[in-house]
Length: 311
Length: 311
Image 1 (cartoon, helix red, strand yellow):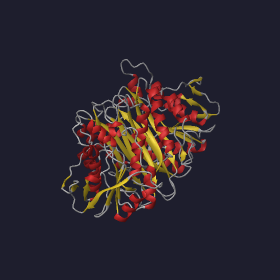
Image 2 (cartoon, one colour):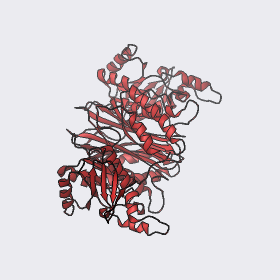
Image 3 (tube, helix red, strand yellow):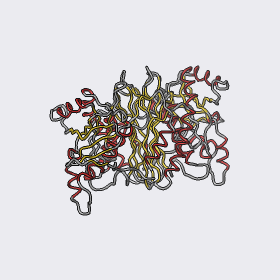
Image 4 (cartoon, helix red, strand yellow):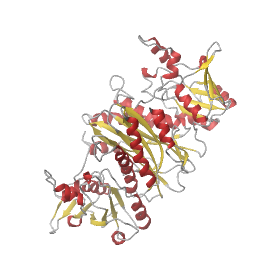
């Protein structure tokens, strides 16, 4: 029942100096870090659309994912994660047990990323599981990575590899928060976005916001082993490259950076500073088209692919 | 479709100086007002539990309510509303039209209360309408009204009148933001809560958080005319007083205040400063029981009544 569940929740959340008033009141009161801006994002996930329950897709994994995708947005702003708020509609039958598992997944990730759970809202109903996480971060004034700052000649750098996330990475999301902070501290980034809906689709969003286009070298695109595995599955008609460009849910970052900064960053990617592959995939152009260059040098327009809600 | 809908949304939201980065990026960047704390609350509403669609219960009204209940939480903290984030699951069929109506209801209220819509998340699915609003306010350090600050001898003051909200006020919620700010500026408030689930239930939460009890004078409780109307409906077995104590969704404030402050505030309630009835309904006691005193002076324990999610 709601009261017991909320009391259980509150008892598991450690006090945090960033909160003047913690969870359990009508609202939380946060002490904004001095001289920093407050970064806020919200993501809502629903059963049947963003996840299916069963198999590896446990309720804990959903809790993990729900927080992770919001933290990925904070990473895409070059901001430091601070706090999160969790609103849920739990199924009326078995809601207490699934709520506890859901929060176990959330709290484990929150601790790992130094995020305090500052509040939320617990509801029940006869429908499927719905969870909405509001994540709060901080960033220095004027230093947030926007989508609209890409300039002609900027190189496009991506973290990690793409495609086939539905084999498991779409749940076991690793938000690139630590990497974003290291990069933000040491390199100039003109624009950034995280890949939730599809590499080519999210890239096109960054370019469109910036009023720019780009040429992408398809032969340099880091393709995840999962993309290869998926393309070999019976009935799958797409190439690994197509999976990489359109699958989405990779939760890697696309960064538009001045060429020197991009090259320095990629050179540093093998070091202990950034234990993550970083790849230059193309260049920002004033010509607003998105052009793909094949391995043989052929250039053709690249149609953005990815997930969009239909309604 | 998502892209067109989000573009329509963004085009209708005016720029706001409180936002360094506005809606449409991975996250919003807020400029926290200097020397103030950030207050954050989230409320999720779902079709079939928090509202039914049909008749007066339009999608616009649901949008209004969804923002209003979060603003009511900000009022209950004595904080000034600043920004809101809106996450929705829209029904796949007709979602575009209902999404536009939903946001019309939100934006109208946001403008009225000086709230900037700073971001959100738009989803679709085959399920009922779900909406989660994160509201952001600001307050001076140490000045937020908490639930846990009530002291023995404090008088309990309520705004407005209670009961029968389901005749329409549960949708046409008027959050007491302006009143809260006037009171916070001029009077000492030890503890506060807004009445969402039931006057007696929410009062018991404030008292429990404070480690206190109270005596309530039932004869002084402000009973709304709607409570009288509901109690006269065929099949309704509850008195107007019972409706007032347990219906909930009144979204009025309960304030625990030192006696002089409470008396001064109630005396000021007829003036233009606070164009809202304010009533002293009882007194906080160190004895942790909640006691109701009848019109004839009989004292008996008052069992908290109201809405709780069962799961």
